[in-house]
Every structure is written in structure tokens, then in C-alpha cells.
Image 1 (cartoon, rainbow, N blue to C red):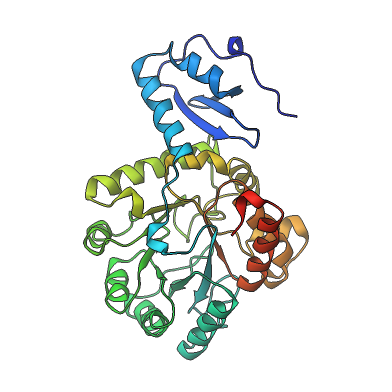
Image 2 (cartoon, helix red, strand yellow; image 1 turned 90 degrees about the vertical axis):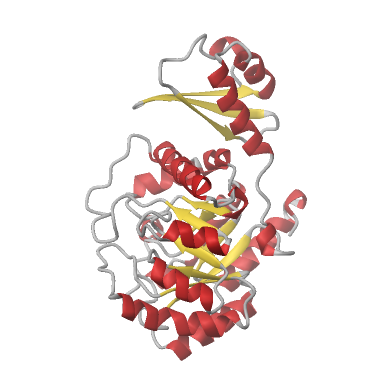
Length: 352
């Protein structure tokens, strides 16, 4: 049972330069207040009423911060770009690469990738995410012309069948061509930070964009990832990228955030992020989680081969949705759709 702190357990004052975060809990009208100053982190589980009374005695800047976080938790941005589809949405992965960690080479031929995309749609995918660059640990980016040749014919073909087609790339040149042939969404592992032209392109096309966190690059990200506190460090990074996107002219209603499971994270980091995933709801943007078949799932479950990690992937997916994730990026669409249907049936408030 969650133990709720009395008002006296909240600090009388905050240390200089402290940052505040809120994590919603499953208990109604109860939240976890996280107070951070550098590596010094304090967590207090408190009622909404106690928090409001305490906030009223704090400086104006603290009241503004808490008011914004609270508003973001209570009024999540609607996925109006998804039409009648309601979250959680399933994004089916269509890799056109010969070297992706899970299905590299399976759909490297355009015809095979297109057929796979149609199969994912038949299985219940809401979005197709098409990529021509492997971003597995240690991967080297392909030449631009190779990435274009892999991804664009598949995007063009599947855009005729799927209402929502995402291009998974960090290159503005690939984004531009993909949007021209029918892509309706951008999914960038660099949070639109790799290519200076990406921000302007997203503004001009007014499409949904996924901002993902990654420490380092695919070539280096798993060498020695370090965080003071992984979930809070990722919150801070994504908060800055959201601000940069809004300053450039991208509407917050078009922004999705992704903590980047496995991208510059150890197993411990991944687990901490997933446990505290609901903290990211304070950003006021829908959360996407892509943990399907990831290495940490295999290590924890004893499944060495990526394609043997379905059960573990489903466990993570259902946990993520329970923490507020609005989009699941997965390889196994049919199994995920079945799992979500049962999850929703057991939770009438979450009926799909």
C-alpha cells in the first residue's frame, strides 16, 4: 500500500537551483514529488491537497513549475493527427536494412519490405515506421544514396495503403523525399538535432515528430553510458528539445517523446526509465516506447535470439501502457494487439 507523506514531510524550503518533477501514481489524488539538485534526489509521495498547500508557500517560480507539471499530467495532448484511432497506438517496424539487430536482411529487398508492411497493417498496425539505416549498437551510417534507395520505394508504396507512415531517419534529405512521396510522420533518434535542416522541414510540413533521447551515437552509445539519474536526465533533455522545437515553430500537438530504450543505456538504465516512465507525462507530450526484442529483454528472460523475445517484449509493452505510453513501436504487431485487447478488457476505464 502506498504510504502518503504528511504535509510536514515536504521540505520547508527548496535548495537553490533545485528542479522539480511529478510522477502520477495509481492511487487517486496521490503523486510523487521529485526534488533534484545535481545528484541529490529526494522523493516524497504526497496527496494533491498537501502538495497544493505546500506549493502555495513556495516562491513564484516553484508554483509556476508545479502548475505546469500538474496541468501536463491532467491534460495530455490528444493524438488529433491519428484520426479516429485512440491510444495506445501500435507502430509496426519495417526495417529495410541488411544489418538491423533483430530482423536485419529479412526485408532488405523492397518487395519483401512492402509485403511485410501490408502484413503488419492486416495484423492491426496503426502506423508503419520505415527505416533505411540500422541504428543498432556499433552501426555505421550508410551513404545517403543507399539509405534513400532502401527506404523511399517502400515509403511510397506503403503510403498508398497506410494512413500513417513514419520515416525513421536522422537525415533531413531522407525526410524531405519521404514526405514528398507520402510519409506523414518523422521519427528521429536524434530528436531533430543531428541535421540542422530537420527543424525547418518539420515546421514546413507540419507533421507529427518523434523526439528520441540517445546518449552518443549508434557507433559509440553502448561503450560507457553514464547518467546521474537516467529518467530525470532524459526528462531534462527532452524538455530542452521540446522547447527548441516550439521555438522553431513546431506545435506541441505535433510532438511525441521517446526515452530511447537501449540507445546509450545499460540494463539498469532501461529498467529505471521504464519504472519511472510516468514522469515523462509531465512533459505534456504523448510518450512512445520502443523496447521490442531489445537486448535487455533477452538478458532478463534468457532469450538469446531477438526473435525469441516476444513474451518479454509484451510484458514491457503492457507495463509501458500502464505507465501512460501512447504509442508502442514493435516488431510483433498481432501479438501486441492481442495483448492490448485483453489488457483493455480487464480495465474498463481503458477500453479501446
